[in-house]
Image (cartoon, rainbow, N blue to C red; front, side):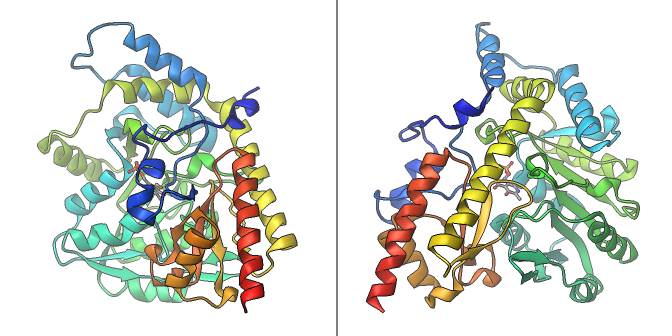
Length: 394
Ligand SMILES: Cc1ncc(COP(=O)(O)O)c(C=O)c1O
């Protein structure tokens, strides 16, 4: 029903899209196919656009109450997708997940406190603790058989070294790892034992791919620690420009502390387009999302097969969620700068460089496959031609 729309080529240049309108600044040339920033080149579902257009028919966009349907649509979505029963008072609006992480850091830790993350990871996990005067503690993930795994011994050791907070990325970016229930239980039990507050960023959860199951951290049996879950329709329905996210906190005293903190910053309310879009997404979005995840899976399968057949020097993660592929380019024998130059100037592709996710990303690049298959085919053929050049040069 919606798949045809996923194939539509849309011009995003001059819309203010970071992915397109910051190319020159970030890559030094206009001449690349952008496959970086994590939004999709796929149109927002029609029912969300209609909801926004309908609201725009009223000529006043005044101060707006958070609609009851905003709460109910989220509660129903969580119950249906994750069998997670949440109460209305346990959720609240946030302008974004990154803002939510920064706010949680300020609310639940003090300057100088140690904050644990698992690298390589989405860059704000690395810079926000430091930017807020906290000490970053890293539990490096192990990359084995094209998949990230947790070194639990190291996790426990780091957790026990006086960490006050753990910022969990679940599913994980980059690489699209969906953590098993057992892995989550183990991490949360360790955090509970050391009185560590857990911030669980679950922005990619809805994009869990066919055959995999996301487990909200809050549903894990051992989640007996202070736990703040951050979720959003933004990544799922390609609406991050609307600044629409929410938190779930089920522990009453933790919630009261965070609610007060947000109130004191006058941040306990959203914007009306975010409300409209969230309600439309969660009330009507299940079928669209099912088609989208199938489409993303086809794109992933295409990249995996293409690399195997034509570019065996590069291997990749097999994402279990979302539209981001972690390319292992270590066999090319280039240092990171050479790798970046190769992708930009030889392949004509704009990807995220691996080291922006942490030093463990050395030799890796992150590819965004949330686009029409035709775009991906073009990108892969550009990469193939560039690689041939490398071989003949050597
Ligand atoms: C793990 C993760 N958290 C948060 C974000 C961004 O969230 P927001 O735009 O709501 O700040 C991203 C975007 O790529 C992400 O991958």
